[in-house]
Image (tube, rainbow, N blue to C red; front, side, top):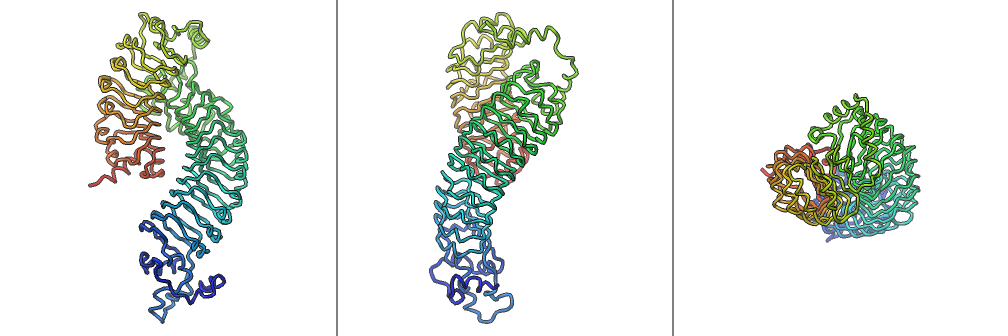
Length: 608
């Protein structure tokens, strides 16, 4: 059917109407319109448009300008036989609204209007019954018109980075939808009717305000990819474990305390649970994950890992960093972990004392080699078992003297105290103490008596307290190499910390820093800086470049609006984490490729 006949039913005069003046045709080159009539595709992205020219909406109706100038047509110029517009791209402009004339393009299969300033969509969108892909991401939409539910052929709907607070009724009528992105909006609930979206393969609900998921979500039998990162989820419906097609599950940055079992998720390849409050990982959580390749449990409150972790024979990446795993001896971390064929194992940020930090810093293969060497041991002797019992059973004493004597740890953690009693320091006596753990208390300041241990202590954990400043006593610990200050109220560090000339690792995550503290740039021994989940708005790439020993920099979930290209010159970095910041470039696809790809991308953008 010719294009003229196709529109005649809607407008009998269509073939005889000359183009109106003042429609904005001058902002769209005639050559572009002519090419669009042949190809059925029109790309007007990045043209600074504040409104869509009338000639675009009427491209299927009006006689083209060249027809008025040339009355003889070759076979290739017979405009009345040419193609209806099927693909329209008007992204990266300044559009604040779309007119109902959008309905004049019923043949559209692709409409891309991302990165504009739209606050609403016209009801005429219901006319686009052939639409298969609609991208309205990065706008200012607060609501969706109910008419959007008329788009029954829609396969991809991209609504991320808007201001949506609800989903219109009837949304489940989009039964052909395969890819739905609602991330970075203001949604507090997900309709139970979503379960009727039976064709859905990918659903992104990340960065909203969801406190729970409906059990009915398990009705999405074809769903492979579910992203619920950065919400307020405190639990996961047990029905989720019945989603047989699920391959990728993202639940990072929520408030989860417990894990569901996954008896039916035989195809699950990636499970991301970092930055929650999970305290226990049991055998029941692992035994069904036969296909798992990636298990992310970083930044939780795990104290141990079950022996059943070794059942995950397909596992390639295991992230246990920044938990409360304290030892190998007492099965907090089983030696049998060394049997797995891991490509990546992260353990940094745990208060471990029985595996040397230099082994951890050498990377995955060295850690696995060390664990395998320990498997050869016959196991603990009777004396070791006696010590284990004494240390793990509740003690009548307020101070764990066994830990001081056998592990050289001064441990007064998880007491919710505002003050460390003198008897804790008195208990040290003439013993050597290399580690202090005062985490999970209510400390508002660092105990002054910590200075008594300045010539022996190398590791200090003051995480999960209420510290708003760092006292000078801490700055005098001459041998300090590991300092954990996460989950406090800090917004600055004293210049005197420059004297910590052996400091290798500092954890400042979940504080209130707005910049990377200047003093850190001057501690040349630093190898690892963890400062995620703050409000950091900038870093100095020139000063970072000078830090030759720095191999890990975690800047996730901060306020970085842009990443300076010069950061690409920090070639010593082996791990650079930037997820969860509001910058637009590098795009997520680059971030997913890892540190080397990010640094190369940044270097390529350094002005010459």
